[in-house]
Image (cartoon, one colour):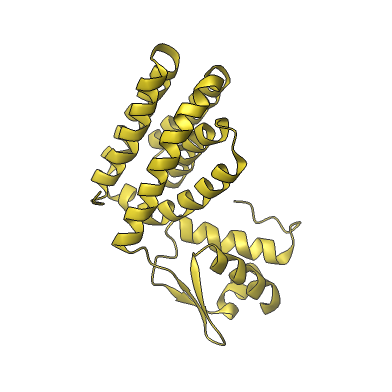
Length: 214
């Protein structure tokens, strides 16, 4: 996320704080004040308040008037619900995106290449972003902007879940690359039913690896 000084102050604060939360630099349960954020970004408290209100509506922080904000920790129940909702959307999207597979596979190969490069560079954050872009491309190809918007919010929350998990095991990156290669192969050589089935299995596997009960 960019924090260019050309952007409005509240937008710069929003990107700065959200970026830190999604990358795990501000873990769940972390408390911070408006003054701290204002000093980090170099702005007054007014744009900080505006940005924090926006982050609160997205469920990423809880505000405490005259005190500050708390990064909302992910509970086991929420982790389950996030991945369950992701499973429903991705299975639906895989079926709808099949008709656009000729263009979609080009995009997915690009995102997979970015994942491979990030893995080689041990760039965990870059890997997570490329992984997310891979799946968002499939959902976008389904052609429903409401679903795509909801999916982006789910992935924001899942990035909080994964912030420490991927760091703990490089093998997860290797496994993800292999799984994504399978999805691309099925788009080019398989059937619609196989692609939908594998899309569902991919999310179910993520639930199992994170210890999220179904």
